[in-house]
Amino acid sequence: MTNTTHTTAPWSKTKPTAVLVLADGTVIEGMGAGATGAVEAEVCFNTALTGYQEILTDPSYAGQIITFTFPHIGNVGANDEDIENLTPANHTGAVGVILKAPVTASSNYRATQELAPWLKTRGIIGIYGVDTRALTALIREKGAQNAVIAHDPEGNFDLDALKARAKNWSGLEGLDLAKDVTSGQSSTWSQAPWVWDEGYGELAEPKYHIVAIDYGVKRNILRILAGLGAKITIVPATTSAEDILAYQPDGIFLSNGPGDPAATGEYAVPTIEKLIASDIPLFGICLGHQMLARALGGNTQKMHQGHHGANHPVKDYTTNKVEIVSMNHGFAVDSDSLPEHVEETHVSLFDGTNCGLQVIGKPIFSVQHHPEAGPGSEDSHYLFRRFINLIRAKRGEALLPEREAA
Image (tube, rainbow, N blue to C red):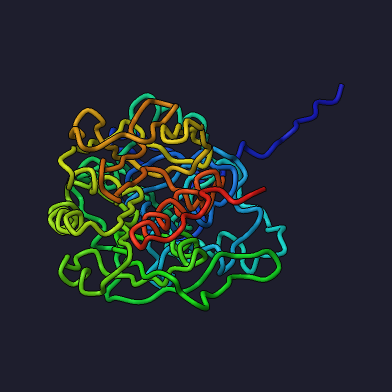
């Protein structure tokens, strides 16, 4: 009998080139994409199936790392039209992204760049090969996690140092991030919504003038307002009420944005209180909603895991209808803290948290969700017409139907 010795190569394991280190010391390994380096941030999860580019460039995600629950991200590539932050060169938005599957080649006629190099140009650190379902379950159980995400093509990480950074990071509570993403100076906006095979439109003959306070405003909000005939003057977050009122606007808009509304409210709330007293129609979204609530005497609180996605059910008590909306917030208005002259108008059907309010007897309202979508469903577009109707009513003009005829 002939003895034959079989030799096989030892089991091999690909060296991880990216890690996610949680504040409790948990280390999650994967492969890196996009920018290199390391950054502290809060890890949340987003349940949207599409629109990852709009999500990653939403300034409301400043200071956060997004875990996409949908496994295949990047298959439609990236382009210059789907960026949501006001000044693309500033690269405000999410600082990190966590993916299940590797980023594949793009397959979409609108793509001008692959996702991985686009992440690099935006300064976003990516990690893929992660069990995102397990990470999502962890966040649902323990809440949004403070962490450090790191990418090194050579796979060299000082884990002890990264653990210390994650543990010592203060988190989002108490952080005013609006000052980091707001405009540096005032500007005007006239770009209208995107139309298939035509691109973005342009406002020709403005009917109204709206001043938008930029706490981290999204472009699609401005486009929808422009599409309804509004010329928009965008002003920095710290602009005084006197300077805003000097524009003699028909309406005032309080934008979305990142961070703790209590921290940004230190300078924003006194301004908003004066704007409320002016009786000019006022509309707020997301952070603008939260700070309006604080200016009216309400409180805000940090949420366990937040709401992030494009498929959240919300009930509008003013119409008694349920909408599917886009959400992105880690803080919420405490409904029980709202004073008697403030009425709750919208509520989340996931957990009952407040999603909207209006001031009784005044042309003032706001919502927690994102009616502009970008990405998401368009169920709540009517809210922009509701805002315009407040302006029209003040002028004595006939009101527009809130929803266009099918």
